Length: 514
Image 1 (cartoon, helix red, strand yellow):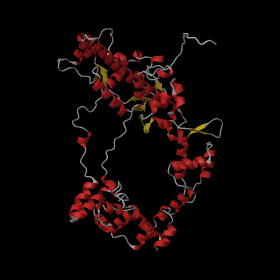
Image 2 (spheres, rainbow, N blue to C red):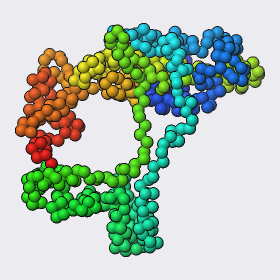
Image 3 (cartoon, rainbow, N blue to C red):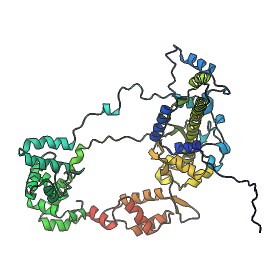
Image 4 (cartoon, rainbow, N blue to C red):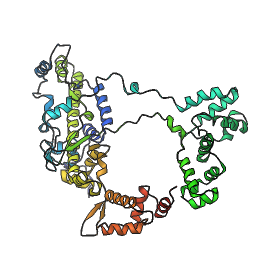
């Protein structure tokens, strides 16, 4: 075989991940908070983008109608439509050019206006409704200040303790030790540091550190600076003058209390059953983590991406939450004005790149919205039994089922359902909640959702009587009578995942109510 140079012509297909396609895929998997941050960044760096506030330009003295007419009079060359046309379904790329699902060549109808879910039309992204989502919404623009400005100032645990310490401790050296001990408290108010290490660090004796610690234990809230749970509870009982020998014995045997060993505790404490019940009730009234009362972390509620309601003609209707959708438009007026005065090639290229990037972002945001509503609509359709009758009717569902129904790839469905929430009449759920594994039935090819089986196990356990505690084997037999084929180890796994104790522990709890 001769070794000579030659030219070959080959034809092949390959997937090229352009920056625009990568951006579109990222947009699809962003939650509403990440999406808002991304759009805000784009607004700052791209002069061709503007917020769609739905207002006229006050500098021109125009009304809204005049502003729209002015915008239409200044169009860039080669563009005859309006920016709103880019958001219409027929203005979107489809097939292999679709930005979000293009890597798999899937095709699906973008126009979901007039689609039905369980027999009812879904109010989604069509016509004036999408226009209101894109540019309307009440928002919070008329509220002055920010979230932090509306919160009351709460004193921290450290400041609360420091203020008391300065009044109770006069010795400067002891104050230094006290400050260090305060800084060693964990989130529960317990002392986490080793006293010997603290003494070595501060150059004092362990007795001095212990003496200061005992003084600090008299501060409010009662129970701080304890080394463990027993000491924390003992401090609170001593404050109430209830730390008698019987109660101290009970604190010394907390493991027996956790095991609900009532007979053993009555024998050790030397009390009868009624006294033991009163002692346990007192312990339950105490606060094992006294520092949590000073926690000031602001809890941010989950904002749903999709809203669901009962349709007027039956079935369910869904729509995107307008508060989570970004309100951006391409600033065509600015582009037309600037493009007239640009002469240099680098400036022209920059202007065109920013204009194309802005157009791509608007189309990608719309494609993201249509994909989310399409996936959510199919989930609602396939899980209609859950919404109508409860968790017992949740059917097994995997990503492949939704992907095949809407002719998309599983990875696209996975991105859509990650960190996206839907508000339903039954509560707020992440879209991932509706995907559960299947458990075989005892009749034919029937299957049951793992979530519905867990719910059934909890229902059976909650209904059991103190004299008839169900073992895992008995639960298996009862489920098989209901047509659910499940192994005992699976029942045990589900029970442990729901933090339900074993039958032996439940029997102790229900027979000895302590």
